[in-house]
Image (tube, rainbow, N blue to C red; front, side, top):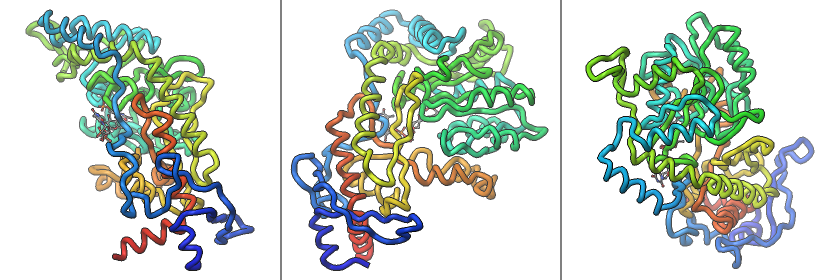
Length: 446
Ligand code: T4K
């Protein structure tokens, strides 16, 4: 319980912060330690708690800051390409822009074949079908729901496997335990652009004669042990959605070194047609159109700038939040090539006292639309929640990580100055945890 004086100091904001140390020595004891004067939303003036938008102050940002604001390359070049497309009267069905985009992506990923598609979800579905996956396929639950849906949509059972809390990707030991007689494949997700334990998963797949597919929606331009992501397993899938660091408006691709698989996928994305009036497989319409490819090509020309902006932003966040107890950033292995497209905070509520979800509320009120990717895990979303009601009991790490993650805005439009202001809000909230909690409680009691 805090004294009135403390509450006032906190509400007026000021010179002390409370850190609850939950170690054995100080269990539950709030220690008062001096802090630097709190910085403000605009970095120059000081901020009191009641200036936070959640308590009635004006939002720090007039416009909403999204996690997924698209990066856009040279407008003039894009418009020139679109004009050429319109003049050519060739709008889709594997036109010259798509062909060039496929070549560029194959080069970048160091693979023989790239089949561009309308989005990564369809690309996953086609890869799954072209690989003849059936029965059960092992996937992480800690991923965007499209990874699981691409299986379930085709009547294949996604078997959710736990992650390693350090990597946020499939735990190879848990994968081994999850294999049954019905298992036909494994889908590893290179989450946040950080590679799975690819060598381990490859060994397991080989030993058990399973197909290995990677959902690399986040991992374009990233490497694993010095080799570009794209050439591992039987195939990999990239996404070029606007929220991805390189977008083609909407888009996705299968990349592979397997010529037969590539041929099959290429036919399947075009209804299975092998000639004007003949199909060899069941197919769908998964084609990328020419304008999307033009956007993709234009953005590829600026890819290094996008990566540099993401890298700078990641380091600014890391620096700004370095001394904040209970908050850490999911690290990137900087010895590898990284696109740094997600800045993911891990909130340890035992230390921050303000919960992850309260922090989301505080940030949203300031127009900082931080996201809880990939909370709550696919297993807690329908139809999986009803199909596998006991899944939580064998996904403890997924549950733990999903409860802690918070993804904050980055990308081309986010500047160090903006990050400074976002981090100020986070500092203000967490350095005054008790005051915040009391004010939130009194607010909800009204
Ligand atoms: N596998 C993984 C691991 C994935 O993360 C994803 C997609 C896929 C597969 C499937 O890829 P695609 O089929 O989409 O190619 C978003 C994206 O829609 C989704 O592509 C992405 N992952 C996922 C992580 O995030 P939502 O529903 O959370 O957010 P959304 O699309 O509403 O966008 C977030 C924010 O970005 C918006 O509130 C506003 C901003 N935004 C968005 C768009 C589309 C813009 O500022 N401009 C835009 O054009 O799923």
